[in-house]
Length: 111
Image 1 (cartoon, rainbow, N blue to C red):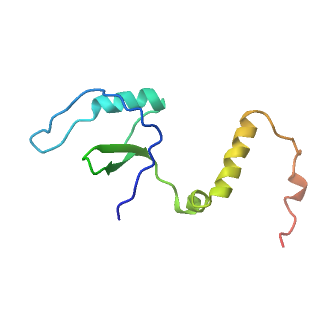
Image 2: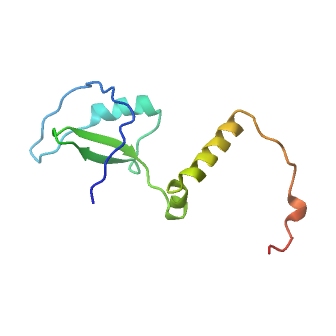
């Protein structure tokens, strides 16, 4: 089933051009080098791309990562995801209250 991509920024820049090889493939080496500069991440075999096409025939490659099934619920629940993101931002900014250790509750029965 085809899905649509969310265009996060419409400011595209040309980084080169390529031709099809004898097996009808194109090299993305220039694109990958630029992507490493933008994302600051190493690219390996786990890196994936969603491929999208519009009615004008333009292609869009969107970097993607896989999400474990047991974490998928969070991405399907916008309100929960918003709270997690907010909590991470607050922690990064040092906006947290140290509640101390909860070690004394470790052996308590859970109802």
